Length: 216
Image (tube, rainbow, N blue to C red; front, side):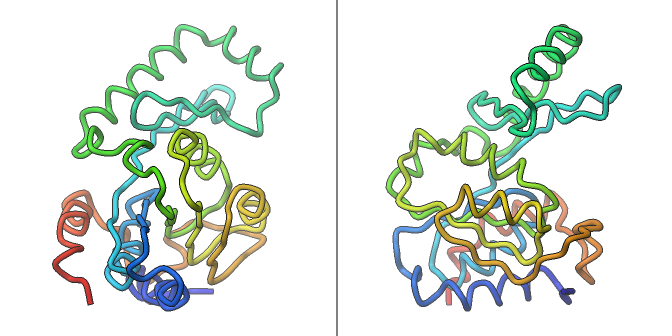
């Protein structure tokens, strides 16, 4: 499945969500910049707030291993595909390097605009719709669910235009509801499925700040 733009994909997802979640206690939580472009359309039609969940991947390049995901508030979600023995091995082998990367990731998120304005507690009792423009794996979903644990959300919902079969299997385990437009067993890259590009940081900021003024 291919899309003319992230905005059009978002409008298509909004059409599936609007009957159930318009005017409800709902927050759109974008998982990436492309997810902001998709989620912006959903937020407009649902009259919902939208925020971006900033994440930083900590990766051991020498081993080509994703070790953990860092989220706002200093939350660290370890790679769920890594066993305890693997985790202990990599941490013992790369302890100093990993500690530095983790500190830098926390610092980077804290310096980013809006990082201190989002917390699990601010989402307590909401239906949280996680939005990405494309998912090749379920790692970010695991990280988001770990971060949301203290929130006691009403529901955690995934809305995503295109997703790999592997990520879909993970989403079925983690999410209360799924709204997916297309799946593929051989996920290439997110941009491959769109004619437009993901928004830059200035465009992301503008969408996050202006959604209320564009409610329809």
